[in-house]
Length: 371
Image (cartoon, rainbow, N blue to C red; front, side, top):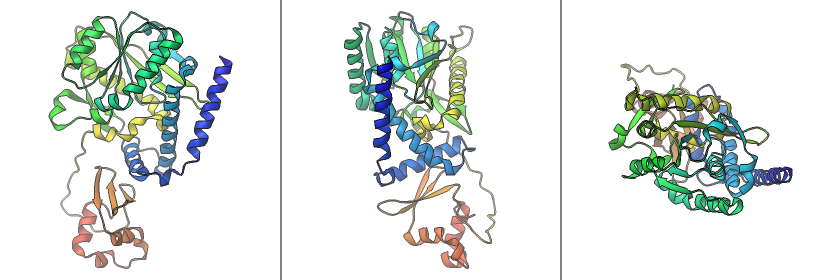
């Protein structure tokens, strides 16, 4: 085990060195991805200073490199530190619904459960199935050969018309379900699917989340096991099994689903605050946020010495044109290079309104681009 551990740390060091050798700001799409990440952190964790956002983003990108490596390094599952009620909730032949989030080296949960002899069904979005399904199956096949395992593994696509029926059938057959509560970009709600979602509190915002896991748990009478994955500062991967959520037959299905989803996000919230640089969901969680409604005041007071509202807006120089990104509403406005230069150099302008013209000046004030 010690030899495996030393090799693992050596490989992680190599991963980090290769990552640090890359000039990220020259990578295609880096700026657009960063401003989205930063807006999501600001809207959910407003107490994190803007000055720390880029270091958190770089930490996340490095964690994604580590996560990919962990799937390639078959022995990584042997090095995981298990915490919590794992002895009671990880038992072959006893079906559970393991609910986790894209935090830390999150794929290790599937690897560990399969290696411990559980018959597993992994529920993922259709796009994720196409992009990572083959590599996940290859990983499981490699584990099967290395550890001479005979238990089963299957990937199911969330959102397919028959997915709920298939899941209930798998649970009835004694297989366990693994699912990601925080979803993925392709599982974000659309206008015609809102009735399948419910609202949960999450930091400073409300999220639309699918109610399916509570519905399935209640219908199948199978407990939910929240599992949190994170990587400690010494690079040890931890999987913490929280207390199971058992379906209450005296509670109606809708109420149970609502309470369960809120409990899952509340449990995750504590760990997100401790490891904000390890959550992949920062890249897409805005797609699940309840749209914010801004109150429109009557008269807008024009500022005497206007400044650019850097807390709400980001200026991005994209390939085609400069763009203003509204970090609050997630809207973009293409602007001219002259307006960009003016917003960056307001201190040297005697009269911003005279320079812009009253109509454009008023519009920028109303949108809070100038404050």
